[in-house]
Length: 302
Image (cartoon, rainbow, N blue to C red; front, side, top):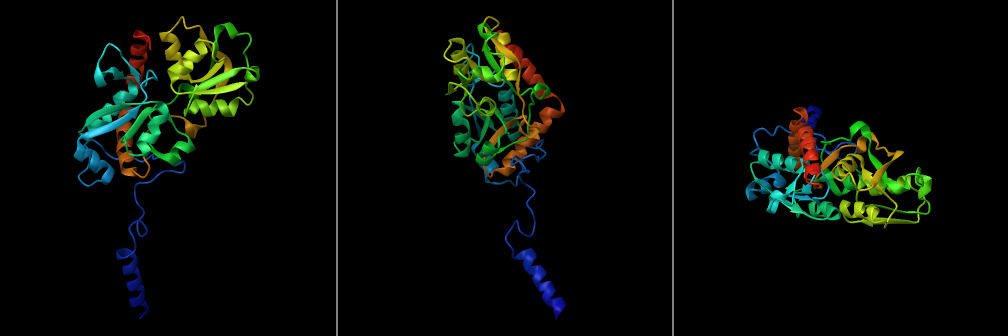
């Protein structure tokens, strides 16, 4: 009698319990709430997929949100037209993802602060725009594994005008000065965490506006991604700006690496994206794109 009852209970567990209780789903986030698992993408989108990938496959279009003012990741080449104007290492990654899916890529340019809402609301399928990991972003959207990491974990730096090299040498020198960062960026958060005293903190819409505010004297210091500022100064050697020596906003290891964003809950889509990321990291393709577009940005003054 007991054995028969035990058998009935086991059959109930296997056949009647809701999916996901009897068997844990293979698609999940890690302890930091980003997706680090991946799938084999060499055969394109699998026949049996969830709604997120099925909709992209059926529409034949992958819509990607990006702010095209962050060389060498994404920027504008004014000599080109239409979608071809938007170039960069991130754009190549977006193109590779669309190719692996077997669909057409549609880039949707917008301000940086609009990228994550566009993804969270389903207006765009993915956001690829030099996005770093933060817990806040991971709570709003699905984030992929990292695909590009700062050199020697250099994180972000403080940029000033060369004329202020002797007046601003430490964070404490900013107490009575104006500072700025791009609104919604990791640099905004790093500046807030590392610069406790300042006269005014301006949050600007684009990285171009941040650089311009420093150049024209509207602010006295800005927080910038280290590799981005290296590309900027190389492309604009007479800009009159410099990195403050010895001030580095270093990232915790789990925060490093740029990520692709997808709508929260679209785990299978992010597993597909991670499969493409695996490809371009294993053979060094993304780093080749990054190096190529670093030189490209310098040549056209971006």
